[in-house]
Image (cartoon, one colour):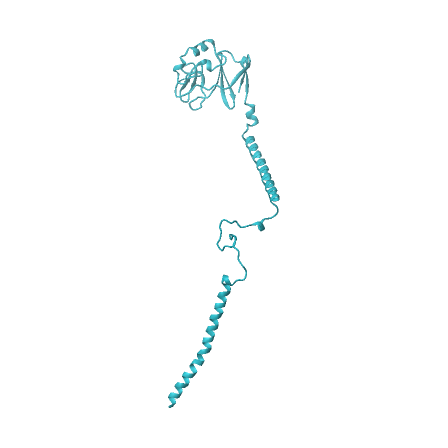
Length: 244
């Protein structure tokens, strides 16, 4: 056998011996991984698992079973209800007090001030107004016309065909006593103050836009759509007038 043949035979004998440790290392790694996978498998655990929806001995889950949460409850049921009722009652009482104060403050802020209340009613001495004359007083920041009408003025106001007027109203509906005519001195067109004993009908005339009112304060000509307004008033005595 030549030298070359001997070298080749020696290499063939030593090659398997060199690969054997590497194969053994690979086999050991695979076995370790297999053991780790087996340890995490559910069947390998020794602690049994019981589903909260499990009923009886069957392995199937029953979704109609409600799990018990008794261990999460704190205290007795009656104690919890008492606390809840107390909190609801306390919050309800505080809410009622707050609502009462809010409503009271709102009503106080909306109520009339002392100076307004002082002008809520005005008393007038009618004995100081002669027949056939006008008097203007201030009531609630507005002018009020008081006319002591004569007999001829009363007859003129009653004889007019009031049904044909733009704001039909008989004279008897505008006065409580025929000789006394009480009206707000505010033009029903744009709120101007008419002039007394003027105009085409001997009553009042608004120079701003040309509205004419008769001796009963009814709109007869011009842009005014309504008669002069009649305020609330009363005669507590023969020569006394209370407006408001």
